[in-house]
Length: 540
Ligand code: ADP
Image (cartoon, rainbow, N blue to C red; front, side):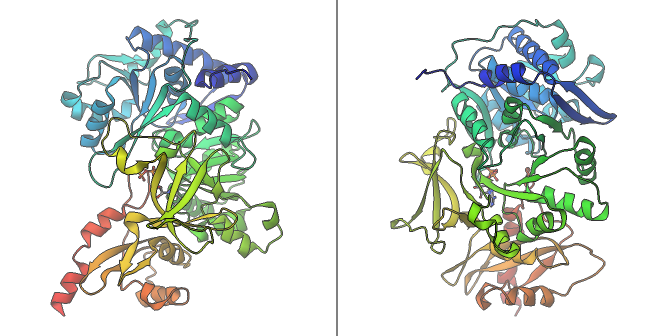
């Protein structure tokens, strides 16, 4: 067989030939911007040319600091196709972390949304590698800034060559992208993606056995383009020629819902907190939607959330699991043919697992004594390997703790059943250890979020003088004006769990603190309530 290299360039060229007239839309402050794939292709090539003019060489990193929009998409292809490395920077990190990752990746040029310039200005003096800032927009959109040198994106593109030639000798194993993932302690860790990895991952997104993304879809990545490449959707959507809809800057649930309705979105992707927000909006303001696939991952989707989309709105809820290190798609909860005739509740049980492995990958379930049987009961750590799984962190000593003997140790505690359905019990660091037994914070949260009065719930283990740790529940009510007694919530759990699993207290919050990618920030809660039982004990 021919050994043709698996390159992002192929995705781009194929798409230009197959889908020149398909549409790409971005929500803007003044309405929407739309153009065709052919326009996108022309501008992408111009961007590569402009970056080459700025001195970007093969293998060098170009950072993006931006929302989900069409210019960011141009960067997604222009940078890898010229042989450089697309480093998507999380705009919601602390300035210290942003400075660290830009310096650690040695970004040479940064592409920045004008609204985000102040963040970069605040760390300007600490950036050691950046030689140019390119601001998304026309010269008139570039605000007065202390950054230098600064270029307006549109001006650079106008001056750039239309016939910039991409290199023809790129190696499929060469880096094409980078993304930093948060670490429990210390600085974020860099994951490097290769052309080959992202090519195969994109192909996997199109399989009917996974999410089945196709030309017929209108795809909307709500998940930020700095969060594991918006789960790879931009690459796959362009390749397959789907219409793409970008939510633009700071989208609210209401804006997202309107956009889905107006543009006929069929597939959208976001973390559970995003889907919760959209659901709340949809319940208040019903809209005719074409949405047939709600792709949800990043943290465990509560069963109540899946039920609402499936039962009330007839939208297939695709619960998927992955990590920045896994490109990210690793498992998807699709029903198998034998499940189709099962009663709704049983189907829901499968839909709310993390699903089964995407073809192309391998997994293991491992405990202290080695491999554990796949019986759906015994739990251990999930190990993964495959062509779109990272094999190390970029220039980071911590690699050896996570990548062992050719396997990625996910740090996720799961069960796997005899048909390969993975059920996440907890992240290792979130499991609650009470009196020598493990309690799953995820199971308790899911159960609490099934209570009709509960909007969000987080459960964390808090140090306890007698039991080592005890679970403490944090609840955001749907309607704060209608107080729900703690006892009612705890009784609700009592019907479902053994006595010792029941949290010892419920604390009502107006909002659960969230991470930069919208997950519950359990670490903050744990730190804030570290002395909760200790001080209670002293007082008693
Ligand atoms: P961070 O560590 O910054 O959250 P990632 O986005 O890479 O970065 O997070 C990966 C982790 O998110 C996984 O290890 C897992 O704990 C969690 N996760 C991802 N998808 C799911 C899911 N569907 N259900 C439960 N947990 C999930």
